[in-house]
Length: 73
Image (cartoon, rainbow, N blue to C red; front, side, top):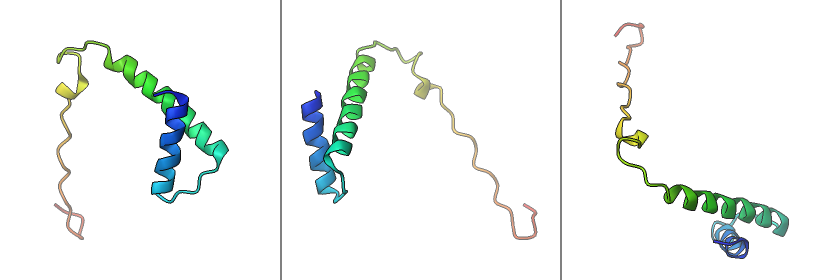
């Protein structure tokens, strides 16, 4: 995605969501979007095995016990 494609996307998305976005703000958002897309492409090209992916070792914390109004479990 280049800057002109990003600007078309940002302008269309803002219109679809009925978001007020002037041309200067749209250009700024499009510039950041294009930069983020370029970074995502670079990261997507890196070959990471399952042993490197943090999502493979993520374990959510247990849900805390709810307390009753008296402050006891």
